[in-house]
Length: 82
Image (cartoon, rainbow, N blue to C red; front, top):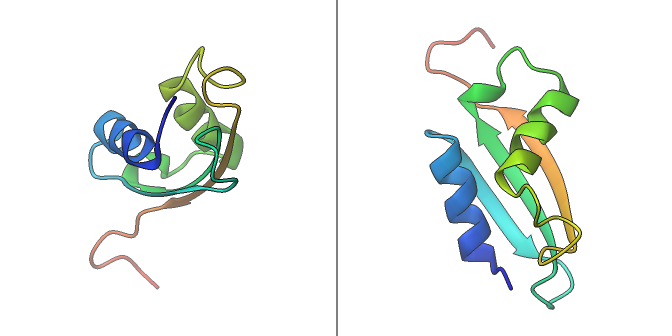
């Protein structure tokens, strides 16, 4: 069974420079929500961003991790136009 710290650590290790906020939405260590901000998402569609996260847990989604809701956003770089 996964926990929020493991999921956070795996996302941040797979996407250097990313930050992940993960919560266990049902309190059962099976249903999670991850909000991920990463520079790697720049120029990608939302679907492509979500696929990057899903690939980190390949083979586990629907199994040991029953559900993972994902919200992604591109990390703003310093000096970026606002």
